Length: 414
Image 1: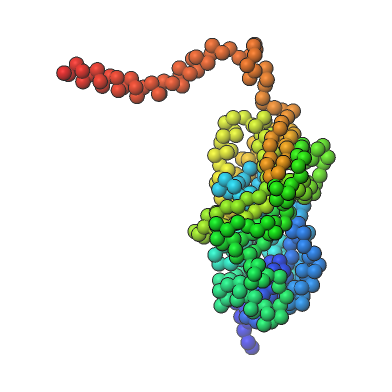
Image 2: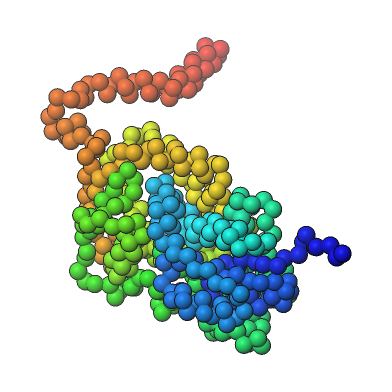
């Protein structure tokens, strides 16, 4: 009797976007492994017709296509926790791509378990961050899962090679030699990299942007909006309540029309190289500024400073792909505890790419006009500040006193 091969892969779940890479991967997986390929399409609010994408996957050779609407889960359980932490990577990037990967990977693993797939696959390159983000997430869920990363295995060396392969196999793709840059879009942002953007001196073409109007073409009249928060989470726009996903969509619409949220940066990838990326995050940019404004009223000074000292580490954890790590969960618990009193409203003005804070208010505000006023008050005794300064100056006085003592000794020695 012939023994079964424990390394044989009969079924693979592919994180499928319908783009060049994953379209080629379906055919390549079938050729190399002789396996069934289940194409998994995650609806993260990228605005595509996923039924059309699913049809394309079937025509390309997928044995089954699974579409999951993850928009509200994405907003509530991934984007909002990150916003509560004010996470920004290298001072600029709001982590729109990075935060989507653990959710895709988690759902992909659920599908693999449901349909008895031995392996999972993705279209991330061997040079990028996404391969790390996907695979760390896979392993945190099932340490024994088989992972197929075609970019680290196949003979293709460029996207031009993929386009040639797609042409030979009559695989429909949207990328062209003239427009080879990569686009990744979801509810929170759109990112662009590769192709003409690989030269950091080259200005991104205006025709590239999908979510934002150029500041020059934005309305001449500014927009003023109020963003309401409850325990660190945004819940309303101008007093109207929205679900997490719909709130982000609405702020993308408002912010995008005024040219808010464009970022062009050269970032440090986890694998060690620098990469140029261009991002659009209109709603996220508004929420970040508004959230900070409400926190300025409601967070204790030392709590705020301690939390801020940990933001870069938290942002790196997400950027590097450790969403399901114990350190991220520990920091999240700390940050969320600090958010319990962050309830209030921030008022912002949007005008031709600029975002200006106009005001903020909170029912549990720690700000007291009676204490901070420059006018006469009965709460703060200004004379007390003299002793406060003297005590805090003591350690600064000691070196000067020591130097004076040494100089005096030397003078006597003469």
